[in-house]
Length: 505
Ligand SMILES: Cc1cc2nc3c(=O)[nH]c(=O)nc-3n(C[C@H](O)[C@H](O)[C@H](O)COP(=O)(O)OP(=O)(O)OC[C@H]3O[C@@H](n4cnc5c(N)ncnc54)[C@H](O)[C@@H]3O)c2cc1C
Image 1 (cartoon, rainbow, N blue to C red):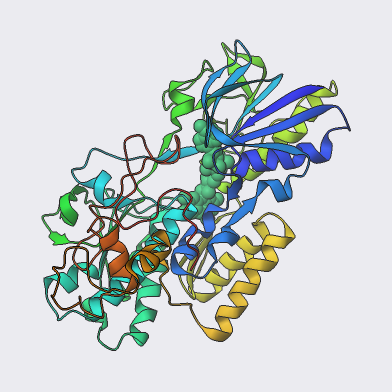
Image 2 (image 1 turned 60 degrees about the vertical axis):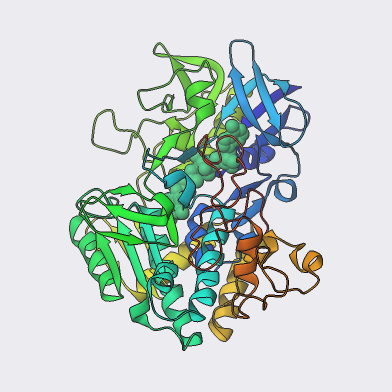
């Protein structure tokens, strides 16, 4: 029996395995998928997870449940030697081991690209994984609780200051959704008003959302600004040390939450630890039929797709164009990959990948969105409904679609769920403290800490002192994440859950 090994079970990997389950004959091959996360993350839902409109678990599609005939290994590929047909796997727990294979599929995606900005690694968080989206939401909600007990002043201002760096899809969607959440929360916090919120979107180029044309892009900027957001174009983050944000346009302010969404970098296992041919960006060179290409010829039994591959864009009029890294392509490439692998096992020729864009659609917060398909632009509520309609149809499996839809219907009737469960990161606090509300630093005999510094503040204090009022995100645990999950050397910001955090709120 042939061994097919898939490295990475995100969009492209999940759809490849799913397709292979359908197209392989019984006993023909065994499919194995290696991924440190045993679920496929539906990344387009992450902005809505951050806003609480999609339950965190519903953005994660279980591989063990939906890939019944695929062997799932929870671990990271740390070395790929196609010459020896061997992948070294670092399991979530235990010693490294090797897996041999006959056919290799690399679909490990990209990682968040960071820059050497002072304070960034200690203070910021990405928006590419479920736990990051949950942490962003919890941090905003905890900050509201903390700010509501403080008098107006710098400490309170910092708690209610949020910065997104990067005006691409994930940055703009995350920013719009979080702004929408914060504005809605004001109704439940009479101590705070709109003037207390300070939301900043920082983009190095002169425009946001490069996927849409100039006019709709400018409309999105105006629409965010009308809602109270500050959009800084042609501006870079130059420092985030101790939560003090310095921008290249000269503005400086303290911020509680800094979300970094400024682009993708190639996956380290691909650009550092494989013998497969790479292009100048560190992406795997593939032919239009998704076979890896070396010296102008297909490399036997090696395939790649999605964000880690440089796939020729046959639908583009521009010679030499590559498909852009997005879900639209990753899904379709995954499906074709499965068909092509099955075809080659059955002695047939693989087919080329060709897909014309279906347009772009983005959420800008509850009831607001933008859609563009060539010259056709739809704005506001209709575009937002298109966004929801498209994604509920696109999320894999009926079980997920129904769960997501049920969550949206519940929210339509009962409104948003406004609870931070940041304290689940410190589940023993209540047990250990025995109900004593004093902070660890309080001296015996002193009155207990302020009642308003409740679960969120206590959780931050217990985790290292940085999560309390005015403490920013700094000073908490710096537990390293798995390779390819968070850029090397970057820990988990304080006050935020570590990898594997299960904090659906
Ligand atoms: C917030 C956000 C919103 C987005 N919204 C949209 C949208 O609306 N429309 C759209 O088209 N696109 C959107 N995208 C982009 C889209 O999600 C990606 O282009 C798509 O996920 C790429 O698929 P992929 O399979 O290549 O990689 P991924 O889906 O990222 O999957 C890669 C997988 O590989 C695993 N992996 C990584 N390293 C290793 C390793 N060493 N060993 C084993 N496994 C490994 C990862 O854990 C992951 O499961 C969005 C992205 C983000 C972050």
